[in-house]
Length: 153
Image 1 (cartoon, rainbow, N blue to C red):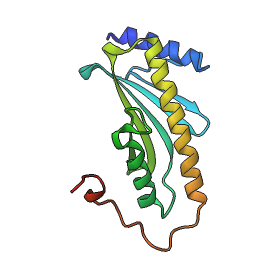
Image 2: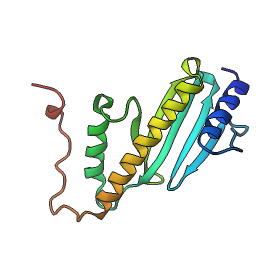
Image 3: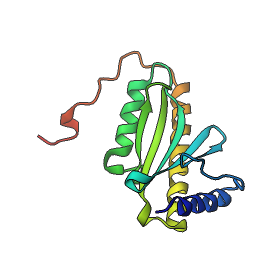
């Protein structure tokens, strides 16, 4: 994909999302703000990939283990993420949802659908994380994940 094609694609998607003046910068990055979340769209020329990620929410204090267990469960075989993956940015202590798309396989409709699904999933988990933050802390620490839960013995 050419940079000009990528820029055109991002401008079209931004218009559909009511961001009429949005366009990628000289580093191929475009960031769109949705209330409390930010969608970052970046074209990685070296791999011909479009990388999407959303800053969902801060990790609730004292609930990191519980949150990680929930996020791992959600992305197990992409059960609730449709190919996107969760991570926690250690510098910001923020939950991210990330999706890479092969630029060659993207057109306006498939890109728009991927963005919409990513935003919908991010919003769902933002609300879950907010709810988790309001819950009282467990008196016992979460036991952690063990491999025997994932692989039958």
